[in-house]
Length: 134
Image (tube, rainbow, N blue to C red; front, side, top):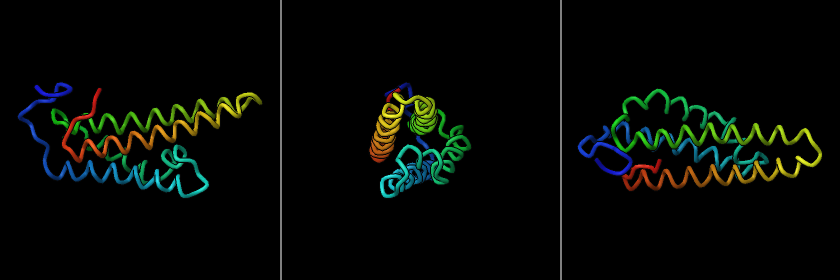
């Protein structure tokens, strides 16, 4: 066993590694769109078709990744999407109070930076053929 209980002998198919790179690329494209447009990173990440397509691919292909280091990347990508959604919901709930508006802006901004960090860190570790931490 290696890092994060991934079987040492089971290597993913080259095609699955490529798909994982494509998924990170789709997420990164959406993050860049959020940086270069009036949309915030996190809202672009959750509403942009590339990230939605990426999450759908994650769910379709994650069974093939089971037992390889890619399994942790699929889990990382899926959790990034759903936790980003959670933070946007929290921000929307905060918007309904006058005091909450500045907090909502802070939550969305921090969540956007968090998404940027997770996409960058995940893609760099994938490039090094390393599993993501739990």
